[in-house]
Image 1 (cartoon, one colour):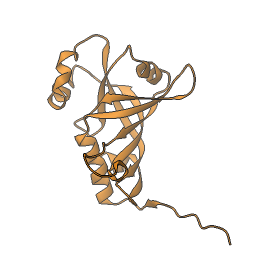
Image 2 (spheres, one colour):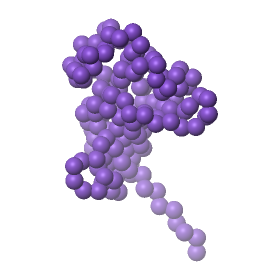
Image 3 (cartoon, one colour):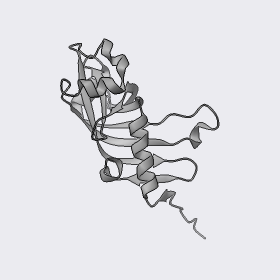
Length: 159
């Protein structure tokens, strides 16, 4: 008798949408995955992150960084948002893998918004080698904890 493959993905509901949006709203950093244009291999780095006023994640990143060069070569990327809590198994805490397209955002017009959420960036926000990057969701995978996996559309992620 062949093994039945069990689909762990649940139907996306309002609770899952709300959790994904709250993870983005509360995040102040994330893991950014890009493809290294020189080697074609994945590369992951930690970045500062804030939600835009429209809920789409933003990050202030240096144009000198290797991940900025990778995003210039291919705008497709992924963000891992959500951190383990102070207690318990880290795999039981909610996290969102966001599949996105990066694009340059208007740094001047978003300065007040960004700094209101990430005031430490005041030290370097106006440096010429920093650009504001917007990560437009193309889809996502939400793990809300044990047995709570959901596939998300852009509309599920951003209201």
